[in-house]
Length: 120
Image (tube, rainbow, N blue to C red; front, side, top):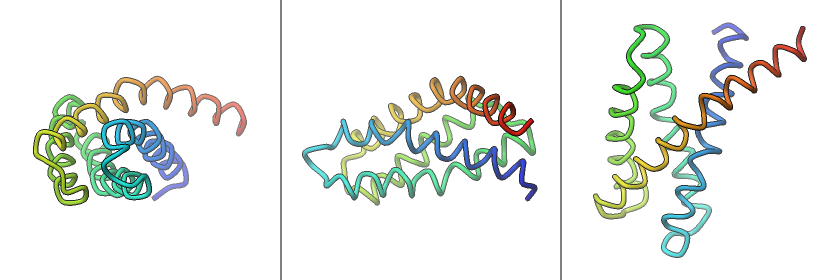
């Protein structure tokens, strides 16, 4: 993995976790301990984020299709990690991924431009 590709992935993964974690906390803040929620946010993204980025970069898979698959996969993982209902897992996965999809793109672009300016 080149350093450039690694930097892009680190930014993408970090943004996903930072943008999705508030959804986890808001939906379950009184039901599940904060540490467990943040760990779940990190683990779920650690499992799905590399694969979705690989599929996008290598096969130019449409982002909407990837996000649909990720929402379904993460809902399944949340059922296991948080031991919550199917409805809550699906709602959390949808809200978290919509948040990171809608906000992540513009933030990612801004961060990478800033990094490019600092390096150059």
